[in-house]
Length: 89
Image (cartoon, rainbow, N blue to C red; front, side, top):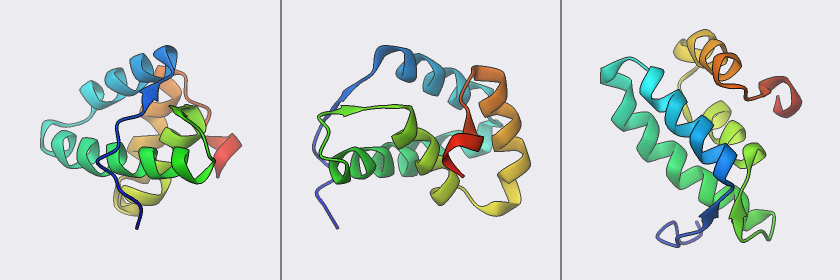
């Protein structure tokens, strides 16, 4: 696995949507989702050879790292904040 300690710049709009999405999650899911999605978004960006985290990196991280039991909640919140999950499924 690649080094997830690397700090990449975030697309500003993507970061705002991501932070809003995390804030809308139930309290007991927030810290876990933030930890796994933060790491996977960096890996996704690195795999694309990018130096910035974009929407695709974040949405794909949610889709692959968040348990399927929370899929409908996750998709609903993505829609609310303006992420287009359908593009990345």
